[in-house]
Image 1: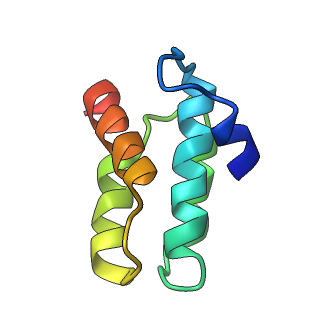
Image 2: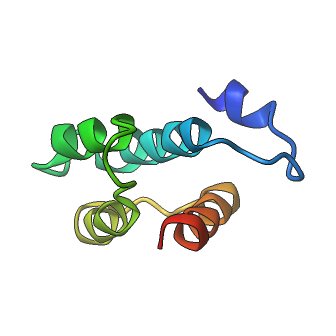
Length: 85
């Protein structure tokens, strides 16, 4: 999925689906095998009929992941918080 992310330029307007895919990537990179709610968060992030769970994902990353976020991930999080609150 990293190649997909790299194909998006910084000035590209992303769709809801693209934002959900980026959030899914964050969940997979930082919460896989760490968070007991991993599968549930993935399911919610992939379901377009549900609100984007950005705050829940951030709380889980804070609680369960010791991995440092990259600049690109921080930008994605900033965008997601702006759009989905």
